[in-house]
Image 1 (tube, chains in turn orange, red):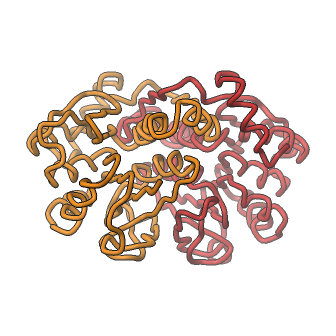
Image 2 (image 1 turned 135 degrees about the vertical axis):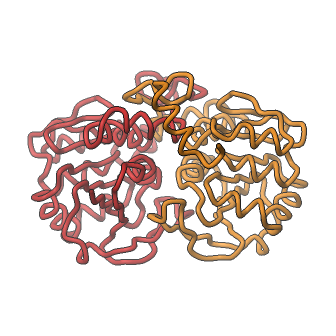
Image 3 (image 1 turned 90 degrees about the vertical axis):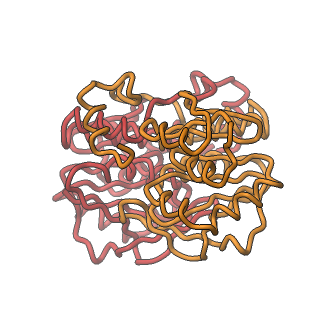
Length: 209
Length: 209
């Protein structure tokens, strides 16, 4: 099974690396990081560079396609290259997936039209505007389109996907191998749980408001 | 505040990127990935390359030092360069930290002698052998030495650290910004919770047994 993770400048690292850490542990997979051009790609904060080993043009598609989110999704949506590649790749993929605002890219490519999907909690209106039906769940399956909520939700999305692609036992073995037994020090991971002042601070800073 | 994440060949990506995603969001930080030599570093499975922007020799230390785990920790422990750098950096750091088997590297450098610490659940005996006092907790603070359990525990460790370095409110804002409201599809993230057959499968494959 082939997995392709599509990078672009100013993506959010954990959106991609969370699912990578899970899906790369599936038996017999090959996983590649792609981008419009081969070479170094820098994350949203400029503090990390990862290497896209292959260009989109070199790869026709994959069994699992994953698009991370991040502020660079805006420029990605505005261009043609990635959107066209995703439309073509989606014709033959078994699963087309995203994490966080990666779903906005899938939506801009026309792949979420009328479909249930999720995104970062600050981006729900934008996802609706792009034709999807936003759902407040951490992981949303609609046919072969699978979307995860903000950033860290990619880990949960990938474990759910691993259970379907392989088996629940394989997914559990991956979960145990990465010791994913979360103990967040606070109950602040969703706008419903976080203190209101924290929610409002992030809303005020958001590029979506 | 300066943060240094020390990479080496065959590190585990999420060990480093989980804490990076949290700590890079602290107000006013600068964060750098270091390695023995500048340049590309490949992860444990050979599927991802990240760039170490600076060599250890170029950087004297940092306020927060973090060492990820991964199978490459064995070669790292066997060499002198990283261990010596860590001993020197620990003299001036505010926090010296690790994720997963990164604690074995700290222990090999002599920094966990008689200290409470944690590691990946499969590596407890090795951590004890190296002079630390292994504790079955997800995040362990012993003075300025902070250790996280396996792979994904780096996210919890970093959020706990963010609360101390900045404030609980800042940590909560980071948690909400990465939407860290985990919903693992299974209860299999620790050996106490996972099905016994899954635990035994991983034990049989482990490089520590």
